[in-house]
Length: 432
Ligand code: AMP
Image 1 (tube, rainbow, N blue to C red):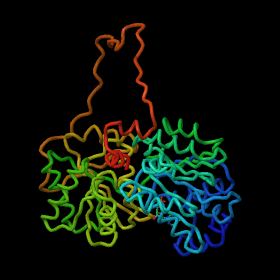
Image 2 (image 1 turned 90 degrees about the vertical axis):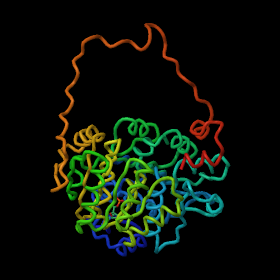
Image 3 (image 1 turned 30 degrees about the vertical axis):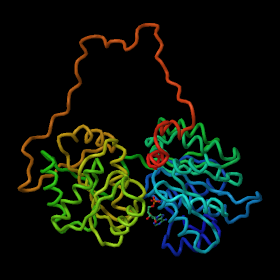
Image 4 (image 1 turned 120 degrees about the vertical axis):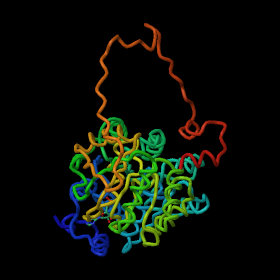
């Protein structure tokens, strides 16, 4: 299939050519006609598959047809779990609207309120937002959804993981019932499916390849590490090998990211940390430094696991394995982007073995074990724990007949998340 068969507005077609895209990706081929038809859609698609353009292109097509409704409010709202992803989506919108007059902007945490209030006062076609900050503005009566035609929930599974479920529902409820709703998620199971059933009307469903068939272009292997010091040595071995071009190193904590980046800088390796405690400007600048090659190693927490689209990241190194197995797929998806090949190396320490087995179960394959000469582990791989035999009936947690107490949490999502005692700035920080 070619892009022109999708019958998008000629100005959008022109921007696609300018972007150098030759053929629509699978998700674009399948999702764009559904979105153009006006139907609701739920689709399972990873980042790296071209899913952003799969909703941005038809959404822009809609915007280029005039709205009959008066007002200035956004006609398309895209909700994303993280600020990085919001910025990425906004960048795509600008890229594909370069030949048309479309106004777009983002409302994300960690940024000043003034420009966001000005954005919301003016005429706005597309708005990309993280749920927490958008709710802040909604609660102050600053958002007009009367013109809203399309609501996109991007990386819905992640939004739910991050505790945004009530916020997403509250936002969806504030939009017109007549809206078209599009939900994109890595998986369409469990809680995500429940939310989809609540918010979408007779959706079309598109499921791309299962997780174990994704990332064919990425070589995955692991090293068994005895300790943190051993991990650090293995990391330095790879970074100093001269075989890595740009690397993204994932740590479990913000402090860990800072420490590892500092040690690497001490070894004259051009590296920086990226995590949620940094201001938005600093985060943007750091990502730009990697993109432009001013640094070649970024040590990050999972803020960078999604939405970071730098085409030439050659290696993803899991210094610590992620707590949620699904995040492994997102992390390694930062390499091997747009048909490039990539490599993912995991350093598996004593605390990581259980996580590794969950990851291997999810991806449906064993990660290749590798040993570096001179940096061999001193212990062997622990054997998987066998299931303990049941000796007695499990004890009841509640006495027969007693009902489990439920706690009613009154107030809005924002109040529930923040609690009454915390300052406004603390609440905003948490939501971002
Ligand atoms: P996404 O899954 O939206 O994060 O996109 C992943 C990468 O693929 C981005 O760098 C896009 O610019 C690129 N991309 C998206 N659609 C296409 C296409 N049809 N042809 C080539 N590259 C694409």
